[in-house]
Length: 157
Image 1 (tube, rainbow, N blue to C red):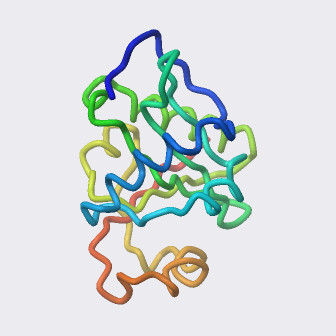
Image 2 (tube, rainbow, N blue to C red; image 1 turned 90 degrees about the vertical axis):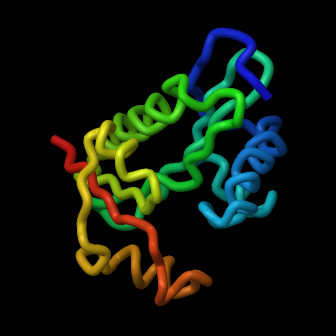
């Protein structure tokens, strides 16, 4: 899948779900993202945005609110043919804007892509500084207690 037209960032729709799943689960098969099921995407569809090139979804990202002052960017995935074109950065910055609109002061990413998130204004923090995340989600993760992802935060105005 490669980009065919002008790129727009928009809220996800039910018609996007199969393409979103395909992109997300390509990363999950490589062990660099947790897999998602169709029902898990549908149940939280309103929290997802997509990058759409006029014909295809070429990127996906979700915003999950963890607490009144903390949200997490989840399931950030870019289609193979759209990598290196700024799609990921546009998705992240759109979710940062959405967080600001909601009055959330900090945005979290658990990632292997440290340099990418640094370019988006995030900095590395200790996972232990994020009790809301650890006890809400990590407790059920197959990677616990050996999580090798990097916790990164962007502080908002």
